[in-house]
Every structure is written in C-alpha cells, then in structure tokens.
Length: 287
Image (tube, rainbow, N blue to C red; front, side, top):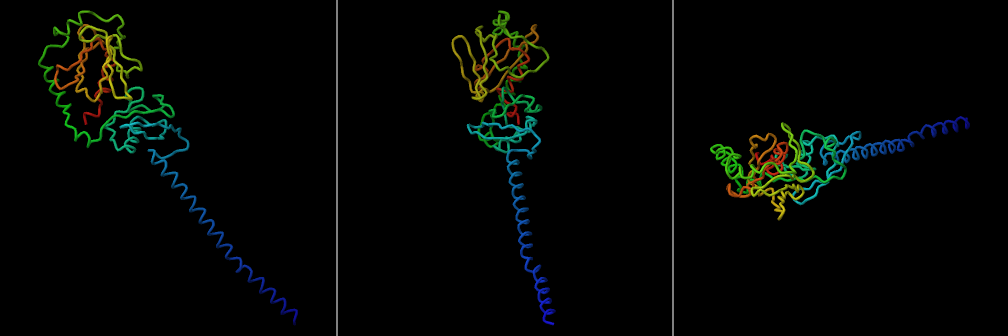
C-alpha cells in the first residue's frame, strides 16, 4: 500500500509541472507582443520619414538627393528620380510653404513641369534654385506689374510696327551682326548654358545677355561695361518680330515705370524669346 501512495504522489507532482510552466508561456507571448509593437513602431518611423520628403517611399524607386535653395535658405529633399517637375514643385511647397503657382524653379534654366528629373538629367546632390514670393508677400508689395504691362500693350496697339519706327530702323538698317546666332523658326527652346551674343543694342553696339539664375540677375554686357540687373526690377519685356527677317526679334527690357527706361536689343533668335520672358518675369506673376 505504501508503494501505491508514493506513486500517486509522484503522479500528482508531475501533473502540477505544466501549471508551473505557464508563466514561461505568458512571458514568451509578452515578448512576441513587444517584438510586434517594436516592428510596427519601426515601420511607422520609416513611413513618416518618407512623407517628409514628399512621396511615399518605395524601395524599388531610384531616389535623388537635392539641395533646394529659396530665400537664402537651404533645404534637403529626397525625391524619386522619375518625378515630374510639377511633383518637385509640390514637394518644394511642403518644405517652404511657397505655392507651386508662385514658384520659378531653375536648374540649368527654367525647370519644365512636364518632364521628369531623369529626363532633364538632374544629378544627385544638385542645387535647385527657387525664386518666388508667398501670396502674403505679393499682397504686401504694391508693384502693379500687370497694370503696367496692360498699359504698354494698349499703347503698342495704337502705334505703327516697332521695326518701322525711325529710332529702330537706324539700328536694323545696319544689317545682321557678323556673329549673329542661328535662328530656328517655329520652335521654342530653353535658354542655352552660354550667354546669348551676336546682338545689337540701341546704340548699334554689340551686346550679350547672361542669365545668372542663382543670383536672380540678368547681366547685360557691352564692350564698355556689364550691367547687373535684378530680374525682380524688370517691369516688362516687349518683343516684336523683325519684318523681312523671319526667326529674329527685337526686344526691350523695361527697367523702370515708363517706356523711357526700355533697354532695346536687336536680332534676338526667336526660339529663345519665350524662355527669356518666362525666366525674367516668371509665370507665377500672372496668378
């Protein structure tokens, strides 16, 4: 009988052991729970980081790191290389608060909205210049550029063609400069990376235009000197094709409030006319 009781006690002790092991299971479950929580937190952190830089992160997309410079402040931006210029403007908006419609974005000229960063050959670490004012800044400054442009256009409609006026015929009758740039009719091109040369000014002297986008300046160079003009100070740009010479324009930069401040340039290749106007005035001014 004693042997039977001892066996029963051993059996009871063996049955108790699984209960003693339960805390180990609870600990394991708690550890798994903590691990899942940490993983979720890690995923959340990664997602937040991608949102800061614009689009949701995709490990399969090729990314590019850019230096955005606006109002003398530098911003770091990481964005997919296949993003369009319009997407880049949206990302800049999230960084700076500057609305896309008010932005003039420049990388080797005015950045097109319909092309991707890959197509315009933007490189890792590239500096992208942004010029523009917030709506509050625009409303705070009383510079009626649009009114001036409308008045100038109305006056132009009343007058004879510019190239027929005596003051302009004096220069045009000299003929084309010997180093004139080739014109491409019916096309629109971005500004070249070199200065525009082979043109005359109102005095009949050689003149060249250099667009210093990083400084938001237009350099007007002659044999005697170079005028460094802030683009924001140019009130209007007037252009007209030269009769009898398809592919070339005469152009004036209005540096003050009246026509007397216009700086005339002759024999501008027509393919660059729109790019010059967009770069100097900026599309954002019309909004």
